[in-house]
Amino acid sequence: MLPGGPVGVRLRRSDRARRISLRLDPRGGGVVLTLPATTRLETGVAMLRDHAGWVQRQLERTAAPVRFEVGAPVPIDDEPHLIRHDPEGRGGAWLEEGELRVSGDLAFLQRRVSDFMRQIGAQRLSLRLSEHAVRTGLSPRRVAIRDTSSRWGSCSADGRVMLSWRLVMAPTMVQDYVILHELAHLRHLNHSQAFWTLVDTLTPYRRQAENWLRACGPSLMRAGSGSEAK
Image: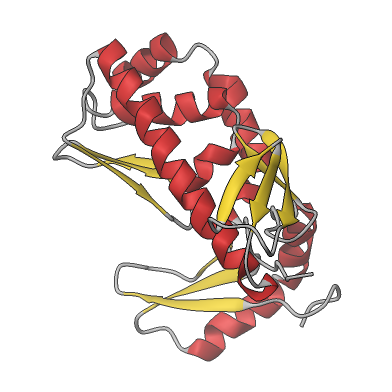
């Protein structure tokens, strides 16, 4: 319990952790308390209480999540689309006249919006990545669009690139930066100077994209959380 109200705490045990760590949960809006395997729970809780003020301040700075509920704007390529309930419509969820319309029982609206956003994210981001791969000559062996809790993208040693579907809500400039960042890892699987030189060549707008993600990314990572049917 904090001065601003109750806060959810997710506990993680880690064999690799050497000390207690505390961070914000980008998806749930609470905090994640990580304990080394041999550390007592009471010790972690004591640290959490000692840092209650820090937690409160960080939560106050956190952007409100994008909500999946009637009347709320959902960004697609950073363009807002109001969610409208169309109970007699057919097709689950679809875009029409600048709106995201959802059919069926109101109780299923949040799930249908979420499913639709994942689908459109997979379609648009996969296409965008393919276009950049052809243009740059940096082609991954496999592409996966997933629902990650804290990462916008990743590249594995065997040439597989992963992107978060949530990127589809960001401006196309930001989408391009994340995609090209991961494609650059196909040549440099590190964050060396050579890697950043390549990234800057591919994305001269890197700083703008990074600033946008820092300021607005948390609200996308938490998209759908706390939404209620209305």
